[in-house]
Amino acid sequence: MGEDRNSSDDGQRLLDKNDKQHKIHLLSVIGEVEGHETLSANTKTTKYEHVLPKLAEIEDSKEVDGLLLLLNTVGGDVESGLAIAEMVASLSIPTVSLVLGGSHSIGVPLAVSADYSFIVPSGTMVIHPVRLSGTVIGAPQTYDYFKQMQDRIIGFICEHCFAKPDQMERLMMNTFMLSKDLGTILVGKEAVEEGIINEVGGMKEALAKLHQMIDAGIK
Image (cartoon, rainbow, N blue to C red; front, side, top):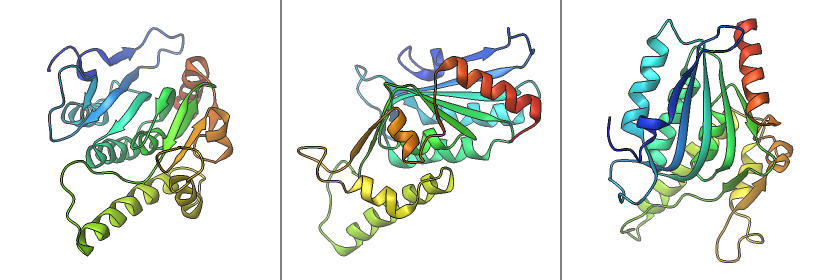
């Protein structure tokens, strides 16, 4: 299903050697979320047209008990990232996400799309306003579209974590942290303190939580 650089090839595994005999699907979102435009071959990408069918396959399967979502992404295509996040959130099996190096931009909705989320102590999350590549027309409709898109992102994030809309807007529009940009960088426990991520932890904690949720039938 594509070239070696894509997570569809080497970013997915079935974890089924555990003592509980649970079958856990491991899905990685690595690098940049690629949308309708193909990125450079030198760019590590996760192709949404590969991830969406896989998520549908997971939902349809009687062999998968839970999903572990590993995130180390700089963000990417907003619509495609939201599509993946919506799919993860709609799964009927227990889901846990783990932020590793970082889950930036559209990676934030991806992180909170799981039923329970973890971030490693050194993991980062960058929260900033919506950006679109290409030509931007200086018309009221363009600004309305940006606002609508940003509201969709904030709405999804706040629906799936403990952060509030005004809080997310404050983080997005922060002018003090990034010298040439707007936004906020949250490291490890700061993401938990802001109510975006549930807990600081690593692979051990994420898998233990997922096994617990499967045993309890929690979704």
